[in-house]
Length: 169
Image 1 (cartoon, helix red, strand yellow):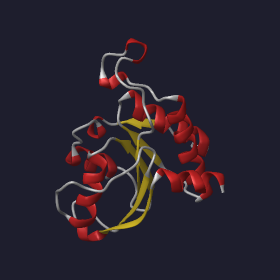
Image 2 (cartoon, rainbow, N blue to C red):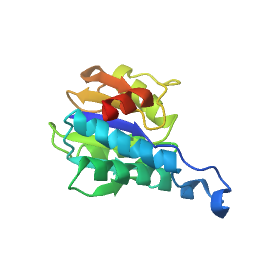
Image 3 (cartoon, rainbow, N blue to C red):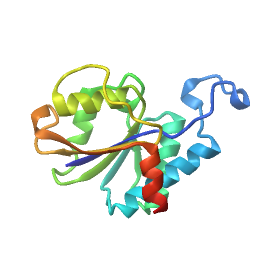
Image 4 (tube, rainbow, N blue to C red):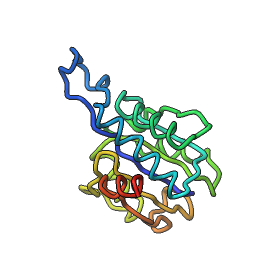
């Protein structure tokens, strides 16, 4: 499986338009552009997704939907409570195991969880994790069960500047 890990794009702060819950924070206009550019970059990299799983928080779901639209993804963007802040790795592993072993799947979530998840998958250790920009993307190749870190390789890691360069190049 190729697992693409995307941090949500830039979102408004609490208080914007009376928003009081972190769950409800939408993307800014810039965040919408970031999400579309991430989709355009993946399309230019010839990524063909069989699945998209997103945190149910508004900013992550909007990121996933904008990216899917730009990639002309024909499937449905699915939400996963496992991708909420505080990420539930075991539940996510079960959800990802439903995909074929040669699938290309994208997950959209939050920091620091995603960076810690990348570190865990490639090394089997817990810790601070990798820094992942808003709208930054990592690609991992999984050559076995997700519970076996030695079978996971980091293929590439794109900060948002590189995402933008690929999208515009």
